[in-house]
Every structure is written in structure tokens, then in C-alpha cells.
Amino acid sequence: MNVLIAGAGPTGLTLGIELARRGIPVRVIDKATEYFDGSRGDGLQPRTLEVFEDLGVLDEVLRQGISMPPMKIHLSGQLVGERRMADPVEPTPAIPYPNALMLGQSRTEAILRDKLAEYGVQVELDTALVGFTQTEETVTAELSTGETVEADYLVGADGGRSFVRKHLGIAFEGTTDESIRMLLGDVSADGLDHQSGYWFAAADNPMAGIALTPLSGGDQFQFGAPLDSDDADTSLEGLQALVDKYAGPGVAKLRNLTWSTVWRPNVRLAERFRVGRVFIAGDAAHVHPPTGGQGLNTGVQDAYNLGWKLADGREEVLATYETERRTNAARVLGISEDLMQKHVDGDESAMDRGENTRQLDVSYRNPADTRPLVSGDRAPDAPLVDAAGNKTRLFELFRGPHETLIRFSPTTPPTHPHTVDIGTAYHSPDAVAAYCAHSGDEILIRPDGYLA
Image (tube, rainbow, N blue to C red):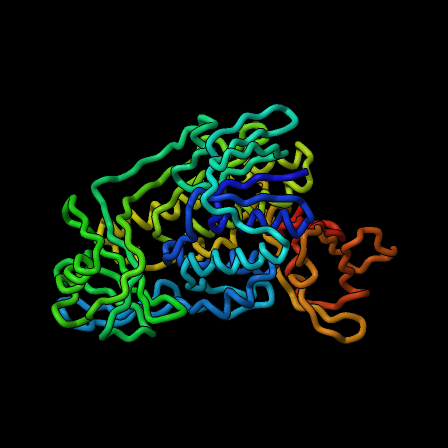
């Protein structure tokens, strides 16, 4: 089997790693002539950090990332207080990474590319998908290089303007609000402490202002400011004029602008995530406003869900991808859209990111089942001690492309190749407590860390 992935953003790269580590031949192509160099999706949610641990990139992500900083609120030139989008949460045995991490998207992509390269797969830049056809057995893709590729499956991870989605004729339902426009960019700012974020606004309109959020790996901030006119000056001078307007002249001197763009609220969900042997994932399937920091994270988890299912190859397994991920995307879009509307309405609670933005509550369970922990829920972590007294964790035993069988006080030898026997080979009161609500003495954990 072989798979062709169109798009080398976080979604395409995650899927490439998922397939390559299972020994499945994969190609990752991208129409861009050079790698993206900007922060864009800079918030990594707790569930994504768990995915990255499984993929073997978490240590590097943690090394390069920073915790979500406090925001210093300045109104009409006066510091009126500090605020966090989310209060820090202490780790627990079940949730080892409870807090979001800030890391610019280009840095996340570089880490994922390096991991993909360890499996011998290089991203093919300046290589666009220009056409494809499919039969019941194969997909035939035409590339801009003139090459024709035969693949068992094609995955479009090629962004909101997805060629794959359009070529399939899949409706992209939703809205683009042209009345709201924002200038985003990555820029250095002399005069500001890089350990903090900043919100500058007028006292009589505190929700209409500019945000400067520190980025890791240097002295740059991600800049976000509303645009009042149709003419958008994305230059350094244009950004400086907005800082002077909202913060006051001389407060911050901008320099080293490396990326800027004009953003419009775009909330859309694809009608389908699959046609035959062709799938879509990430922004190709759903686009989010930045409120809540959900877009990149949802795409990564699309890929994490799809990878093992493509490797499995059975139709009854592949059929669950659209059911599970489209339902989740619709839910997450609702969270992001609600936060965006609060911001538009001037509701200060828009700055607070709740529990539901961490994506730890993503579940593929039957909605009618209300038990605390059932098939389809995320499998919690827990510390373990083996018979020799060595300490480990469930997540370490889950790690890898395999499924895992947990047994409580087993009385027969294990027959599953990846078995965790609680009560004999391993001891863990935390694991027993975390899983005790599940009926039965055995629990099967899917390769993506959800109860099967």
C-alpha cells in the first residue's frame, strides 16, 4: 500500500509520520516553493501535546515552546491589570500536560519535518497536485512536475482553498464575514518586555485594541490588530501606525517584520470528509477563527485519527473517519465561533479559554451512553510500577503504532502482543481508579489513544 499526501502543514506532516512509522510508503507534496515562515497557529493544546508524545516529538516541542504568558492590559496609556487566557493547571496522573503551549507554526512544522525525515521521507516542495482520478482499486494523480502517481489513497491536507476538496466537488458550508478584518504579523518590538503579552486599547472601548503576544525562539511578538478600512497596510510602517494609535507614540518601536497577513473570519465545514479512496483533513475539511486556538490542533488530530485507519485498510474502519472527525470538527467550530462572537460583542469573557478548548474531552462515544468512561473516550494516563519496582506510565506503554490491551487482575496468560496486566505485571492504584468506570475486566486502547 502507498499513500500520497497533498499539503505539508501540521496535518499533512502528522499523517506522514503516522504512516511512515508503520512502514507504509508515503509521499508528502506541497505547491509552495519554500517552507512557511510565520507563527499563524501558535497555540498547542494539551491533547495535541499527548499526540506529539506518541509521535516522539514532544521533547523538542517543549524545549522550543513557552507557556502561555500573562497579558498586560493597557487602557488609554494606563496599565490596569494582568490577565491570562487560561489559569495554569497542575498535572495529574491522568492528564500529564494540562496547559496549552505557545510555539509558532513554522517551528512546529520544522520539528515534524525532522521527525518525518528520520523515516526517510522528505517533503517535496514546488510540487502541486493538478488533477486526479480514482477507481475502486487506486488513485491516479497528476503532479505539476509532469509526473503521474499511482497511489492506494490520496489525502488532501492542502488548506482552506483545497484543490482536492474542490476537485471532488465537496461543498464547503459556512460563512466568511467581510465586515471584520484583522492584521496579523510577526514583529520585534523594542520597549516591551518579551516575558509578557500586551493588550492596548482605549478606556471607552476596551475590547477594540491590539494584541502583542511573545513568540519563542527570539524577540518577536505575534501582532494582531483590527482594520477600520478596506485598505490594509501590511508593511512595518502600517503596523507601527496601529501601535502608535492604540498604545501611544513612543511606547514600542517595531522592527524585523517577517510575516504579515489580513485575516477575515472564515468558519466553514466540508459536507464530506471522504469520496472513495480520497480523504480530506485539517483546513481542507474545516476552517476556524483563531479564537480558542483550535484550528491547527483539530487538523493534527484528524491526521492522528486517519493514519492508523489507512494502515488498517478495512472499509469498516475507514468508514469511521468521517463520522468521528466531522462530528468533532462541528463541535469545535461551535466553540471557536462562540468565542469570536463574544469578542465582536465586546464581551470580556472572550479572553477566557475554558476547559473545552483543551480538546481533552474529544470523544467518539455513542452520545446516548452517559457513563463516565466508555468506548470512544480518551484513554487517561497513569503511573505504573512493574514487578521489579521500575516506574513507568501507561502513555509510555501506549506509545507506538499499536493498540494496547489493559487487563485488571488477569488469571490467564496474555495473548495480545501489547498487553498491560494491572495487578500482576504492573501495579497502579491510579490506573484502576481512572478505568474503574469501564465495565469489564479488559479494555482495548486504539492506536490513537481512545478506548475501543
